[in-house]
Image 1 (cartoon, rainbow, N blue to C red):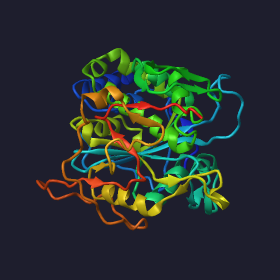
Image 2 (image 1 turned 90 degrees about the horizontal axis):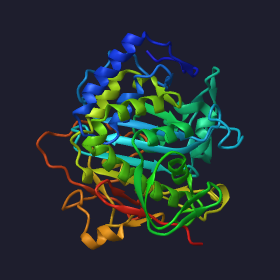
Image 3 (image 1 turned 135 degrees about the vertical axis):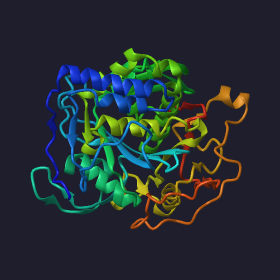
Length: 420
């Protein structure tokens, strides 16, 4: 049975004893594990402040058990630029646009994970989306991806990305500015390398060359800066963000972070008042099960890539990003087949990032596999991400087209300042 789209609303405050009990169960499950971002996933569920929303097609069912989730995962993470309830620090800009849109895919056998970043300025078709107030919004043929959050909320962003990729996305989360700040504080900051100075008057980010422990508002500013990195484009910002994300994965892999109950509880409290979760993520068992699926994935099998696009077009693409659908088909065919992916050439990190000179001097970063092979382009209208691969068969690695930039979590990279 399909549930109607629900208005955002706060869940009832649980019994304090039950709340403590739930936290202890979640924390106990997480502490012995060494996955990438799962401590945050597990901790979100312990707070009474988390808001939930139903995605189109959400199905009711029994919660997962406290073990690695059975099969693969597609989870969409959306960063909102809404100022509502965020205080006076970010100005009084109205609206609610998705600043960041990222898709996490975990393979069926939990051997690899891929994170795809979608340019916020990329012009794409937007399907008809449910109106939270009732009814539905008309489909649109060409609009920037970042309007979907204001058009139909998180469910609309999910529907748009599903149509764009051909993948089913049952899990989704939306995080606001303060959530990013507080969660970076909770993990104790993330070390980020900057190879060229960053000076962005729009976000106030000023960073000299070198390694910086980013925390609090500095983290948010770094993730949001566009004019200060690469060529000043949305594509440059994505590659700079991937410098942060790969370092975050390495940081969260450390046993010190995962065994620190104070940090785990801090992450839970940080996320609670600044997130909207799909109802499919509201169960603590589901959150922990997804987390546990990441625990044994090697750093060189965690890939961060950008949806391919170009700038400098005209018409509806003037000043925006035009998607390269054929190249994207190669990426999503690999994801649908649960194949690990690598960039076409080592160091193809995009205009906002470069290989860390210190890492380059020490030798090439480990690759995801020795013999990459390309796959046939996918049919965007019908790929199935739920097919379980045959057991005991070594997977080939898909070498992506040159237009798809990115890196693995095993590669040490630096953000590149915009020197224009």
